[in-house]
Every structure is written in C-alpha cells, then in structure tokens.
Amino acid sequence: MEQHEITEILNRPLSQELLARDITRLAYVATDGTPRTVPIGFSWNGTEIVMCTPTNAPKLPHLRANPAVALTIDTEVHPPTILLVRGRAELDVVDGIPDEYMEANTSYEMTPEQRAEWEVGVRALYDGMVRVVVTPTWAKLIDFETTLPTAVEELLRKQAGRQGS
Image (cartoon, rainbow, N blue to C red; front, top):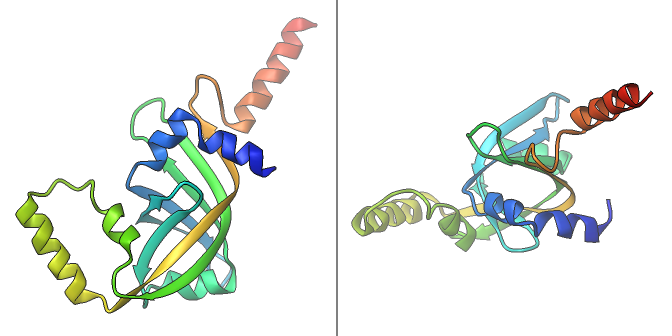
C-alpha cells in the first residue's frame, strides 16, 4: 500500500474519530509463534500511533523479536465503524511517564481532584515506560456503508456478476 493511500484513509473524518478514541487492540506474534491481542491505550500524533507500557510488560520481548503488529480501533454500535492498521512497532524506553500516556488517559471521567490523585499514583508507580510507536504501513476503514470487509466486497461482486448474466 502506498503512503498516499494510507494518508487518505487515515485523514477521513471517520478515521479521525476512531483515532481520537482511547483504546486499541494490539495484535502481535509471541516468540512461541502463537498470536496475542491486548487492549491498550493509545494516542495518535498525526503520523504515528503511540502506546505506552511498563518496562516489564510481557509483550515487550515478543515485540523485540517480531515487531510486526496489527491494530484494531472500533466502535461498540451496530454496524460498527472499524479502523484496521498494520505496521512495525518501534520500542522507545523512556525515563518517567511519556506525555502520550497521560494524553491517552484523558477520556476517563474523573473530577479534577481524582485526576490529580491518579497522576500522583502513576508517577509514583512507574520509574520509566516503553513507548510502542507504530507508523502505519497499511490501513483500512470499514463503515458498512461506503466500505465493507474485503470478503463481503468480493461476495457482492460475485453476486452482481451472477445477476448480470
């Protein structure tokens, strides 16, 4: 997929709405070859999806061994809106708490007092974190109105071909 195609998909209004959400599902391959999917908070900076995780997170050795990842960001309504993204995870170990971690956790409903208490707890818990940075190399938006899953698109083409004969 060409970069301009990825950019066009990610700049669509529905994609931008999904990229403003707070949770994605990160899929990766463990070192034993089996797949894993974990929900994780994220932020979008306009070119990269950034997720932050503790330095002792079980996913890190697997991401170091095989950085190929897939992400799903979707809605909980029917029909869902779904953004699928693929890329490579780059791991950036940082001291302290990355700004993206604090940004990814702003959507939770908290009073200002609760937020301040939460931040104190976070800063006391983590000496450092790992930024998992994914630059999209492939993207697909599915809204079930203008775009469909590839298999459904194929079935519709076959159906139209049969009806046209």
